[in-house]
Image (tube, rainbow, N blue to C red; front, side, top):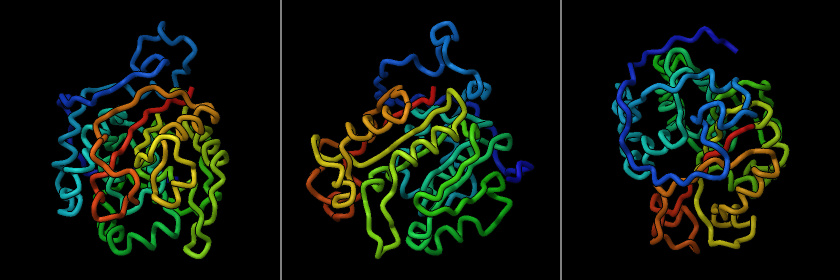
Length: 279
C-alpha cells in the first residue's frame, strides 16, 4: 500500500452540535478515561480525539450535486459524528459502491489518514460511470486506495484500521444469487477478517435497513432488510462489543414489508445504526 498520500482537504475545527439520539450499550464508551476501561488496548486511541466539524465535510469543494442531494436522507454528518470518525484515522469503506461515504471519510481523516474503498464486481457493475467520475482527478482523493475483491476473497492486513464502515451492506451477507455474480458470503469468515484487520480499540460503524422484528436472516436477500437482533448476534459471536445505538435514521412510518427499492419506501426506510468496538 502506498502510504505517501497527498490530500487536498481543509481544517475541521468546530464540533457538530447534532442530537444523535445515542443509546450507550454496556461497554464503556471509547472516550472514557483509561481507568474506566483498563483492558482496552491503546493502539486505536493513538488517533487523538479532536474537535471535528462534520458538517464542513459536506460543504467541501468538489462534492457532486448527486452526493449533495443524498445528504438530506443519509444524514452523514450525524452518522459520522455518532461513529466518531477522526482526522488521522485509517478507515475501510466495505462494499463502498459509488463512494458517497468514501469521499466524506477521505475529507474527515485528512492528509494524515487514509481510506480503503472496497468493492466487488457486482458493486462495480452496479455503479457504472459514477465511480469513474469520482476518481477522475487522482489528486482530489489522493488519500483513498481502491480495493477490488470478491465475496469470500477479501484479505486485509491485520491490525490496520481504526474505523470500518458497513453502510447498508450487511444484509447482503444473507443474500445469494450466483447468476448475478453474488455468491453466498461466509458471514463468520468475513467478520473474522474485519476483526483481525482492525486495531485493538477500533470502531466499526454499521447502518442497515430494518426488518420486522423476528424476521429470518433470508429477509436480507428478499427485501434487503435485516432484523437488528441478527446483526447484534452475529457481531457478538465474532467478538465485537456493541457500544451504542442511534435512532437518527429510524422511521416508524416505514412499511417493513416492502423491499427497500420499492418506490413507496425508497430513501425513506427505517434504518438503524450500531457502533461496535473491537476489544
